[in-house]
Length: 287
Image (cartoon, rainbow, N blue to C red; front, side):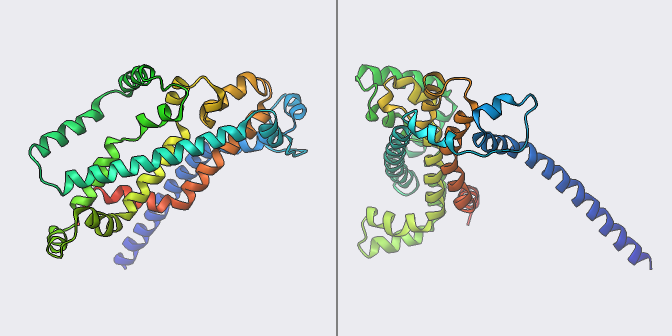
């Protein structure tokens, strides 16, 4: 009898705890998601309807797609998209090559001073980004690469964190596989592409997705090295749209442009969220 009471009390306590936890999570989810809801809602409001609201309404009386039409006709949003796609694909592709080769060198190859070099390499993570941006800006300016895709791409093709993450994954692969491959006459490059990369594919996919998101959201560097509208990305193009496009008062059209820019990343994250979580957590697990 006492055992049943204890079990019921424990079950009741667990239910109360779950109710509290899920209630807090629900409140937090509402707080986090409300700005996205408001952004989408506002993008469907007519300009006159929006300005006539003394108290903001959480619904739309007359939904309209005119704001989305304006986003592509009144400003060169399509050009910004194309520039961003070129920048993102080129930067991510080069970064993957650099990251994979660097991680392989630090995890598998033996050379004098490897540990010291890797320690110094990791110490770069301690340097503030502002100092790196200043150095990169001076270098790009001296090379006359401002307002070029080369100037946009080159400073972003290396990431210490991604190299470290992939290096830790490569290090978990048993040495016996490498020695067996060498006995069979397999070259290091073939071993890398046929064995190591497939085994660590979740981490490679994670790095790729995170880099795509990073490039898509890049703002400070593109804003710094480009003042020619022909090279604007969607992130800094939004500021140009606000200043010289719709105007500061046309909030619904601005929200429509922001929705168009945000949706690809949201879809990308929703599709690959499990791979991202698995790839990041994999780096800290010894197998």
